[in-house]
Image (cartoon, rainbow, N blue to C red):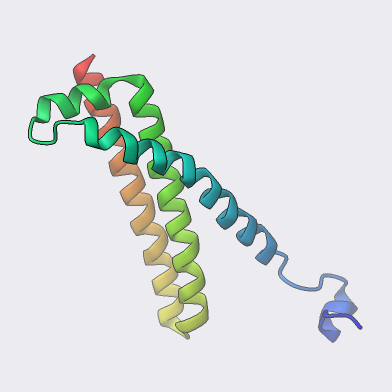
Length: 126
């Protein structure tokens, strides 16, 4: 018994072939987020939040700036993948297309803003 649709069998393509790739990306970002989140959770209590200069100095160190950028990238990509599935499952019609486009734009804008901020702070403290 095959899970392919009759048209898929006829064309030889089966499914859209993106479900597995999406699933793997979600799992890989989840795995990447474990050590990055642990690193951030351990590093954060040692930071004097009341003093912006100490936060700038902390972000200005490459050993902190690089994992922070990786945390932003992995977290936002993981979020985008998860929310994409929710929209695909529960939103229909033209609103679905608009929602997916808005989701992508929002996550890209947040990623660019966060990475830009870390770089500016890092360069400014060097």
